[in-house]
Length: 434
Image 1 (tube, rainbow, N blue to C red):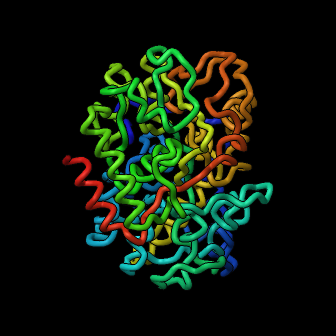
Image 2 (cartoon, rainbow, N blue to C red):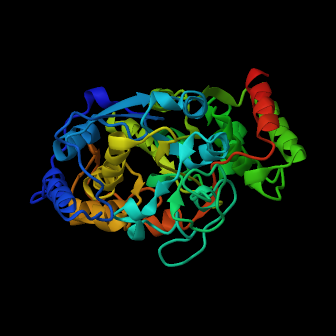
Image 3 (cartoon, rainbow, N blue to C red):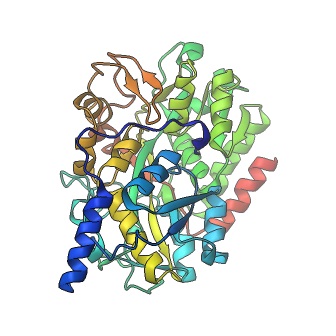
């Protein structure tokens, strides 16, 4: 999903202290005193260190790598993969990377392989400030979140550092340290639809025949499909996040009939495909990701991330460790994670439309206007800029869906891997080929 080549370097917050300098000082103190400081393993910035990070590209910005180099002295090299290939790479070629940038639903496929190790939370400086979606399955006010699908709390912890089993309660060893999360919905072209849209059922409305699209990543697309089928009252589910074979069959039957009737213009797998479909006007309603909506808008094309009465489909991602990592690379990985949570990176990604895992540290790196727009649902007092410096909203605009609470507090289901995953994927592929 990244488009790093053309991105311009983002300015840093005024008065920001070089984290490299801070970490060097902390490490020197730890060495001199023979003590270990939480969140600050030994730093080896004086020696060349390169961290190879494999992931979907959601967070793979040149600006982040450049800032990490400036602050920590590490070189960050990204490998961008499709979602399915992230899983394959993690299970079959885990020695090819030093850190894994994965989504939580992927863990159900990766962790049983034993190719990941737990992240020791005693080394995570901001662990106690991680939004409780990941540590308690709740919003910051204690409201429990939906557990339909792979809610992060279901797979956040391992039973031990080297375990390949998930723990039901916090164990001290996290599978991933969360980086970003968001609530997804349908994207629409309001200038071409010209009427209110308020339900997932609209994706199958014959009014949009030949101008609709759905995401073709089975583990994610099936959840959008379930939201559509349930909203249309065509299929009832016990748990959309873990369907029975009968529920999968019923869902695929609805989609296949719609496809044969010409409802779908295309099925997209990659970020830019969704952008091109929407920007060209070939599609007016479709599954979409927040950065894609942002990119369409940055092209001067009207595009809305439409809040819907049935709620959002949420996802979350984080950084994890392959089981082989040790020594200097392991220390560097912890340093990178602690840097990532210290504010600059979180603010950068908040401007992308995501949410960072540690809200308190990101806030000082954003202007009051930015924080009000992205987090509080307030009208922008001035033009809103993307992380890479392009204007994406005009003064007076309110974020689609409103505040953090309005969006994350209205999550219905998470991206998932079902018990009947293989059956579901086979049926999904049959639908695509129909």
